Amino acid sequence: LDDRAAALSALDRVLAADKLNPFALLMKGDIYARGKDDRAAVSFYRMGLRSAAAVQGSPGDLQQRIDRAEAMVAQADQRFQASLDETLAARTKRRGTQDTPTR
Image (tube, rainbow, N blue to C red):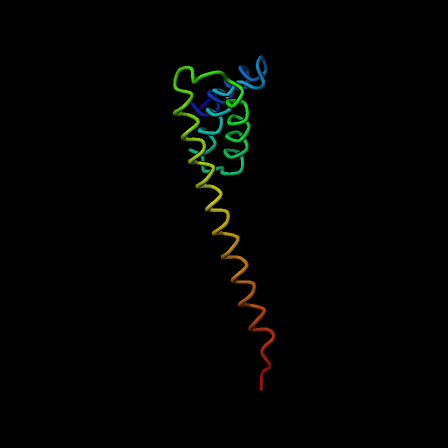
């Protein structure tokens, strides 16, 4: 069992006991982000951010985790938007080429 799998398993146990634990949710987001899984990372970050909003104060390093999660979500959104723009531009270019009459 590698460290990633062990960490995810431990966090799953925490979340089984407290499904809204912001630390565990944000930590799962970190693990998926390190694994380059933007979709899963953003999902856990967003759940963690919603859960953290209900916490009074900022115990431990929660604020740093929140700041990191917000930055990571923004970066993932930018990568997604850039990918979408690139795909649409390529499709538009292809259609323009197909619509051009040949002689």
